[in-house]
Image (cartoon, rainbow over all chains, first blue to last red; front, side, top):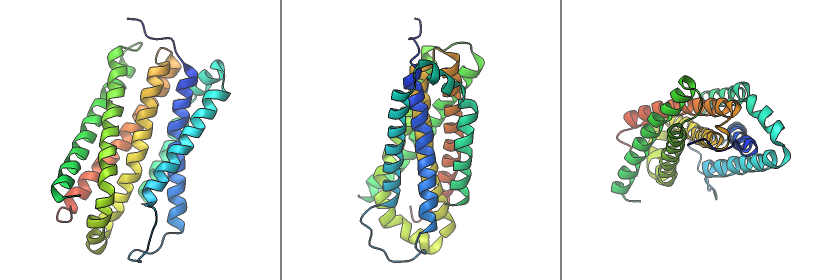
Amino acid sequence: MSPPPPRPRLAVAALSFALVAVASYALQRLWDARTEPPPGAVLLQTTIPYYWRVAMALLHGLGAATLAGLALDRDAALRWLSRAPWLVPLVVLPALLAMVLRP
Amino acid sequence: MTGALFSLLERLHGHLAVLGLAVLVHPLLSLRLRPGLSPRTRLSAELAALLLGLSYAAGWLLYPSYRQQVKPPLRLHAMDLLLRFETKEHLALMTLALALGGAVVLRAAGASPEGRRAAWWLLAAALVCGLCTGGLGMLVAAGGAPAF
């Protein structure tokens, strides 16, 4: 069975979704950490911050995926896909380190 | 949520995550060692993303009960573990986003070398984040056993 023909625009949309969701979550968390109340403070919260951050990160990821999927043509999408070997570590490693160092 | 349901979901959450990470190794090795893309490689990437997604969904359901029942004692007695748990939650989302992205890239553009390379990097990043998540999960579950 031969593989289906490549759909690079969908692939670059998925790449954008993953990277933007990761970056968005990490940045939101770092922002929240700056303004976080001290441990033990009694708070009445209307939202669960973690759920809120996840929802926002997914929305940002979906927005970036839509933009990338619509704006790039096939050749540009393939060019962006070929940049993944440095783009993925560039986004993921700082985010991973930031989340480990600043829980 | 009852204690029994909490325990059941907690175990399901952990076991599905371990299974998802184990399945994730197959497309990583296969993409690196074999030319082209086999349907099984694509399928195992999608299965890994599905298992990690199910694990994440179980964690999502557990989170409100964790905040109400487990987090307060951890905050009092084991602040370090609490912070590690928070890191685990952050990394879990990153793992899921990267695994989903990798599986979709492989499905959409696995026929091209650029697509396979991009998928490999996304899946490899998902595995790294997932292993950190799993390690922290085990650490927290072991250290906070009475609270859990």
